[in-house]
Length: 292
Image 1: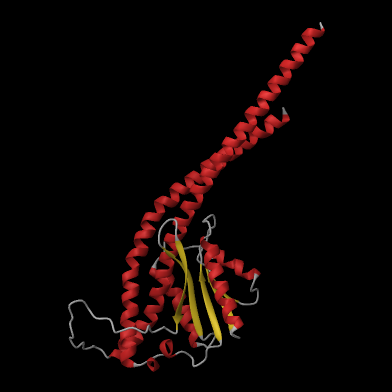
Image 2 (image 1 turned 60 degrees about the vertical axis):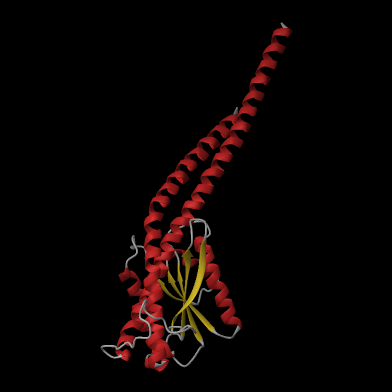
């Protein structure tokens, strides 16, 4: 009887867990649509701004700003690891941290110094591997919906630390949203701004028109460079928000189905144990009757 009672309690526990995972899946699915729309809507602006900055930089020259020219050194690398504040999101956070660790190992193998800037609670797992290398643990626990001001606060802090000579190169790690099933970990250099080796972007239907800038190209570039850093971080946060909900929805769907399979197995065990107990009681009754 004790075995039957234990199985019954376990079945009830798994059913309760299944209700929770099913509810979490539904909540994640509801949040995913809005987060996905925001991430997709933010991509064209971020990509276009990168193109404009690259175009101006080629005209003006990289020496126009430290955010383009760099510090003249390539020794200290800051890895900005953007993760979520909550778990139960499958491999979402793990994949971002793993990508950052691979980059850190690659840089250390090349003789570089690596430090970390954590943006998200789940990135703190890096303390186990690099206890002395965590430079900043930026608190995002109060952020419910990603806003540009949140990204700008991080960008301003990074630029100030860069100007103070705390690092030479900054890399940003996040997960690019593709679908609820696929989120790709991405590593991107954000300081100094990398200038892609491609032709200068042209406006649609602009032909070969000459572009005149007011104020000067140097002034526009100086204003756009810090904004570009903030926009790239904002884009990463939007991509992360969608990736987190997609990964959580998938993880909770798998957990709900696994709980259902476990309930079926436990129910079979319970029924077999119950039948065995009934059979044993019948045998005892028959044996007692025959003895009389």
